[in-house]
Amino acid sequence: MDYHAQITAIGDPDRMMKVMEAEEKNFARSSYTIEKKQDGLVFNIRSKDPTALRATLNTITQFLVIYHNLKQMTQAQKAQKADKPDKVKHKRKITNLIE
Image 1 (cartoon, rainbow, N blue to C red):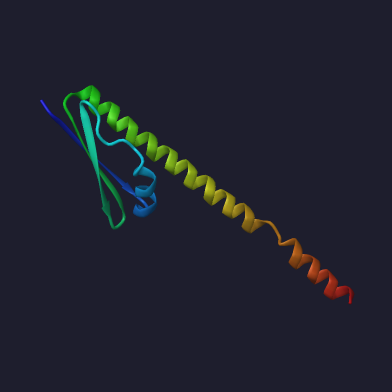
Image 2: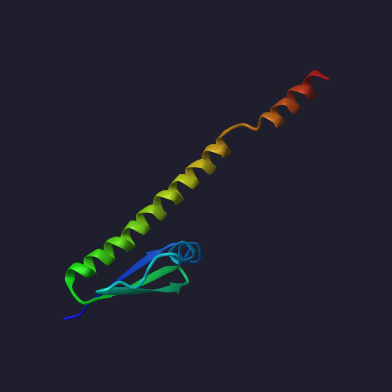
């Protein structure tokens, strides 16, 4: 009996695809393909048994968790930088007040 599953990941398809290109996609008892869509990626998984299907699903979901966490960290860093006042501009304002 063959098994088939599909995962749709919504996000920037180019960035996700770039990260996933290095991943191995063919295994002894399973394989998957990635389709780039306008709003994300679609993973099509095929396997020969349920254990291999689960292992491949775990591989893909681990990637998605790592990608999600990195994206959140990057956004938090950007927000943190935006919240910090620009010291150079602040010094210029003080200098202008003194002069």
